[in-house]
Length: 58
Picture 1 (tube, rainbow, N blue to C red):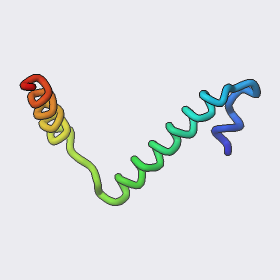
Picture 2 (picture 1 turned 90 degrees about the vertical axis):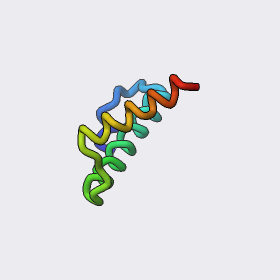
Picture 3 (picture 1 turned 135 degrees about the vertical axis):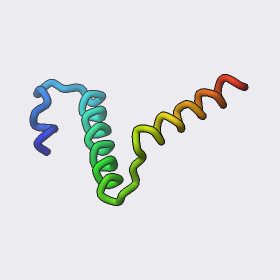
Picture 4 (picture 1 turned 180 degrees about the vertical axis):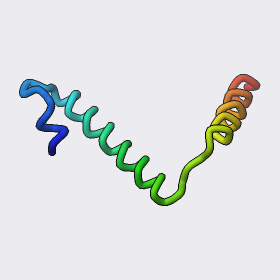
């Protein structure tokens, strides 16, 4: 509710929806961290590289 109250009074439904999406993503991320569902920087870089390689080899 605090985040929504910080929005301007004339905020569009699209702006409100985007704010809610961002907040939900942050909550999921925090839950993932608390549950240990994280990757190191190196692991993330390797994944990204493998995805990029797979994408360009199509």
